[in-house]
Length: 125
Image 1 (tube, rainbow, N blue to C red):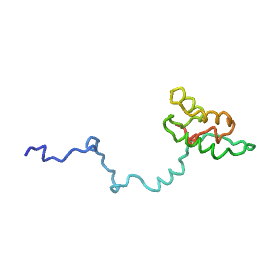
Image 2 (image 1 turned 180 degrees about the horizontal axis):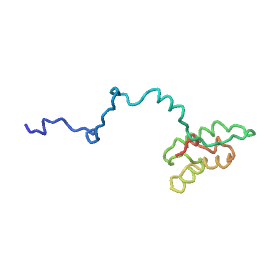
Image 3 (image 1 turned 120 degrees about the vertical axis):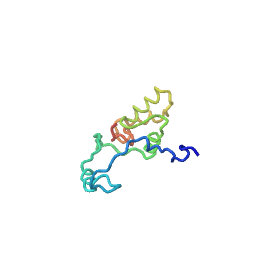
């Protein structure tokens, strides 16, 4: 039998350098749990301000459902960090044929942030 046949098969982790654990750290624990809880309080998500005009009535639930489906449809590209109309226009420029009813609704309710912004408008890239 050849030496290679007796060796264990290579694993993908074999290509990464091994790191030694520091003194006093038990195996499997990389960070102190108390430090993790402290860092959790410091983490903040960047949120854009999109104030809701107090005089606007809430949009029709059927309209919001149609826009939600547009948000979740990845065939028109990502929607993070842009408005729905910007996404619609980008999809149109790329020849992806987004629904015209979406554009009409967005233009009709242009001043309503619930309609203008996608589900993920608060996140920035």
